[in-house]
Amino acid sequence: MAYLRVSTKDQAERGGFAESLSIPAQREAAQRKASQLGAVIVEEFIDVGESARSADRPELRRMLDYISSSAVSYVIVHKIDRLARNRVGDVEINLAIRAAGATLVSCSENTDDTPSGALLHGIMSSIAEFYSRNLASEVIKGTQQKVAAGGTPTLAPIGYVNTWRLSTAASSAL
Image 1 (spheres, rainbow, N blue to C red):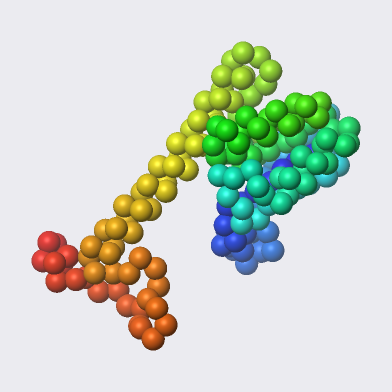
Image 2 (tube, rainbow, N blue to C red):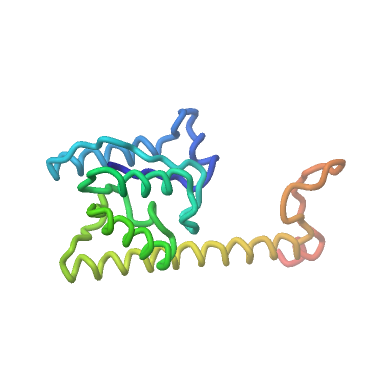
């Protein structure tokens, strides 16, 4: 079976396609990997607009329930970060996959049951957590800078016009 995910609704709707471009690309990669393994994808679980910072995603939960009651050999993901963006979630999800007798397979990373495969999996999971936390930090920093320059952190409240104009302090700094 395959698990596919995009983080935001905007990503899911990008490009005017029902599934954007990312989900079909993940699906094709999963199909190729399944063929290489001599496996058939019997079920797909797709979370759209769900962050991997939390393991409380509808399709992920449904997938974990499915593999615990079905004979599944492989759980195929495009990348480790599609499954989890933090080490705790990664460990919990992987324990559930192993308890079900399945093997997690990444289309993009060579993770396997060897010591080096386990090390790579841990590194990729840590990188996904770093990326997520660092991105959040950068967004906060950018929002604070926008406010300091006289902007609003989001769209202006109803009744105000959304325009972009540098504040006097910001324009004199240029």
